[in-house]
Image (cartoon, rainbow, N blue to C red; front, side, top):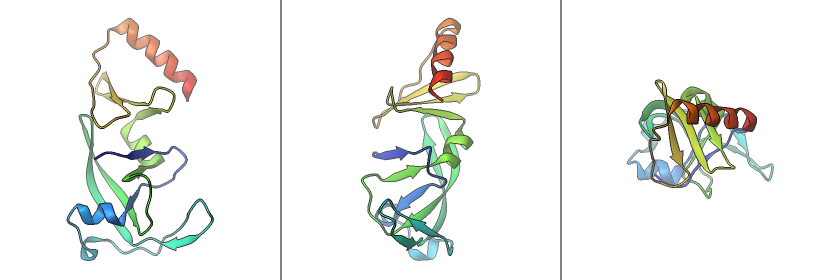
Length: 136
């Protein structure tokens, strides 16, 4: 899936209803919730429901809960802090990539729809970790 926004300021993961329907899901598959969300303009709207899906990012597969909204966005999924912390990753807006640890290796996912697994030597890895420390 393309157009995924990783937002460290968002406390939850959001999936627009249009994307939810493209997954072949219906209203009966949603877990009902009474959660309300406020958009950027301050408008409050009710969440349609929540769904748990397995999300594959690079070589990692994690079960994630998404709150399905009726609003439209410029993105297909919004991944918030919950996903960032569960995935042990560092999103880098400066480098337009996502750095995640898979075991004792670093996997770098570029900001486009493809992904690359980076094989790095120890000294390059140390420099990368030092750079990432200053971006947090």
